[in-house]
Length: 225
Image (cartoon, rainbow, N blue to C red; front, side):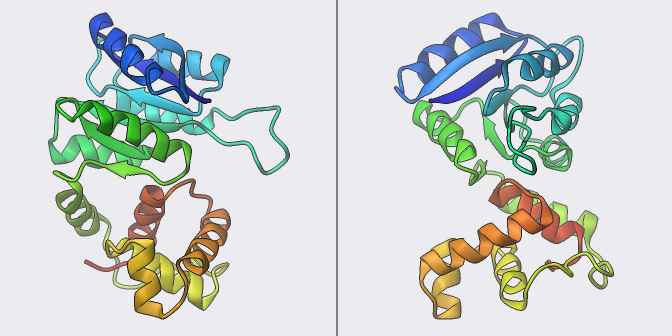
């Protein structure tokens, strides 16, 4: 079961999410919170796999809470295996600054509240699987803006030193917007080989999903606009 925490200042919204997600069969809503600070406390107590986070909330916004959730890890996990919950930002606002701020803070996904019900379920599943999710309506704009803000003339010294040449190549292609299948065709390898290299790269650079790997690539100069 995918353990999920719902964070929204409107109780009726949380109730709707709960019904929708629990009807999926493989998702369990383990708790709710109405603001950012409460979300951080509940995440530390309940250890969810995914947090569905609103942005604007009285008493503490979702972006600040997302940043704090980076420090929430499972103390029972094996050494090197503890991880913070994946954060799915679900909001009515599609302004670049909100999306950009959420990704900068460490969010693994971004959806608008007017998305179809099945999109929310799919997003939670994808985040739990380490894939990440950004609403298609804002993906290209967000990546372009992120690249513009973080672009460097050259990679940071030592930033990608741990990556092999093939891992670096795959991360760059991922950041350009390619899927695993497209990367495999580009490099004339199997899709499973791409997944294997990408998984090792993510472990080395400390990212938990594809979205944050793209963020890392732009931040460290491995990807270009």
